[in-house]
Image (cartoon, rainbow, N blue to C red; front, side, top):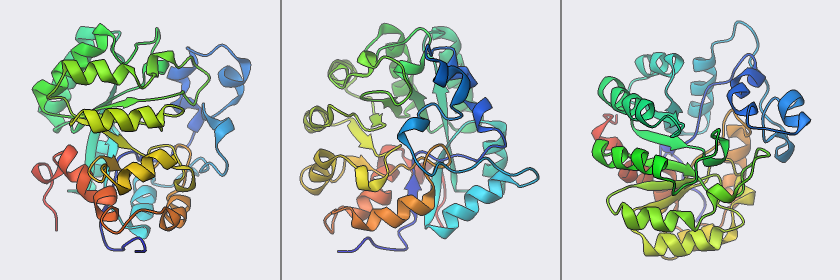
Length: 293
């Protein structure tokens, strides 16, 4: 079956274009050693992408730009990083903005306080965590990360964690997919979502999703024509409830490119609606947070 229209997709990684993309990633540059990352690349995985969306022109409203793109491509709801801009967007577009908080577990107690405050004040929907990008790095199964996972269980929100080789030029052993095995064992109540591919260990990611009920996967940072075969095959068989759509706009991919390529992904009929919307609605408990039209 062709990809259905009118589903009202949920995009689990989306944001707003910036006037100066380079400044957005300055917090990550401190962990880099190569000169290209530290001084030249505006987007730290720029070498991997082509046709990266441009910086926003001066005087253009970033909220209007993103929601215009969402409306053009059938995206109903987005998961955005928590900022003043996203809070404004939620006021302007009620029912369409979910909020995530990017954390660095090195500041254990500060991170836990931020999580609880964001949940109480803004109905935080998820926590995100980039193990390779922390300074110092924090492995997926590190005790400092365990404090974050325990608080996610307490707050009843998912943890989204980078899996596989990092795009930026940082070491990646801290994101090896096998590290998720111990976390799932120790936190059976945790809803844990792998982001950014899990390559080259995507077959291991599938084995772990078969094993652990709370572990799932989102397709962030991958153009659809590059979705790993093991992930597509898993969605088409026993993993229809485990694979969720996430884009990468405006970081590295345009919604135009994503939705031009999506129809060629060989998902089976029963997978499409789960992938585009229904799985995210369950994992992120979206029906409890927003009223659908």
